[in-house]
Image 1 (cartoon, rainbow, N blue to C red):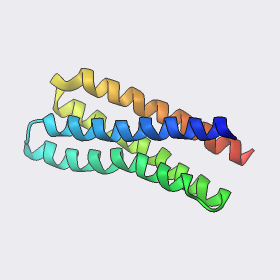
Image 2: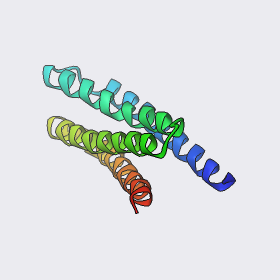
Image 3: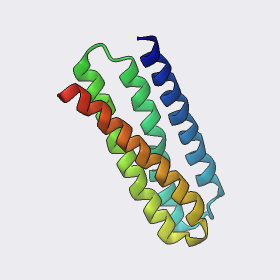
Image 4: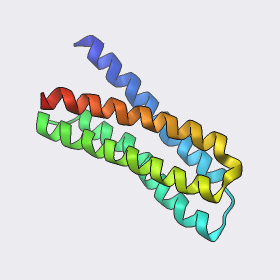
Length: 120
């Protein structure tokens, strides 16, 4: 039980740090008309991952927990999509985008694993 709580806290820290990295990354992008639209979408999805995870940790039922984790998974996938479009529009940022995408892909795997444990 203590081990699970510790793992949950570590994931929470990682997700919050990722949200901050998304905000910092978005703030550095050139303010073009295309980027403005993409940045808003990226910030919404990229910060929503952690917010929904935090809500999942406060869930009162297993069903509610799985639902919120599923939303975090969906937002992770969406964040990768927006990062891909931003990469297309800002090829000079490819290295940083790749790093953010890889971290987001790790979240997808983690959330898929969590969901799988509840559905088996």
